[in-house]
Length: 242
Image 1 (cartoon, rainbow, N blue to C red):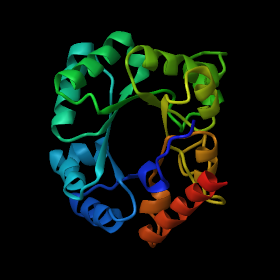
Image 2: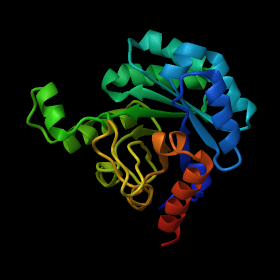
Image 3: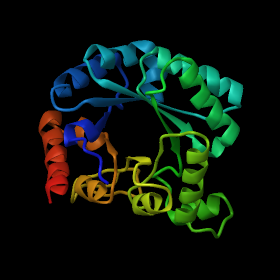
């Protein structure tokens, strides 16, 4: 069954800018349109907790996209610190394994944040199947690896995964419809792919079952980010009401 969330609740705007001032301008200009903003490690490394705080100050939900991948004890501490900054959604590499993922879930529970959404990163969306097979000297289908990592994430207590919409239907079939899939690599029809490879349009991602979509440059690099945001939301609405 499709999530009852409306488009504004399901669109995550990636605040992939390099200064706190630019981030503040972007968040303040879009806070009336969307409920979620993603702070990645470029801005967080440069500006620290202040980057997370500006999202919370805007009354929005914080996706702190730091992609934890380390030994279990280190990840446990990292998750606790991220949640102390008000993170509502966190990423961890599913390839870190069951013990690492369970440590993250335990950290959230110990912090009294069982409501926090923890998702496992499967295969990054800039990798094509040939790139993946060359990198890992593998003949395995990329989709099969994504499914295996999604199952590992589920077993490790994750709420869901980050995955390309190209693999999204297979994840929903293999695991469960209520297993959250956060989908990056979103581009409007006719737009360039930039450094992404496995991309889809906002409406296609929603039709395929995405619970949340992450959109960065199509909005943040637009001449009018608010208008671009409206266009993404319109595409999502079209899919939800079809």
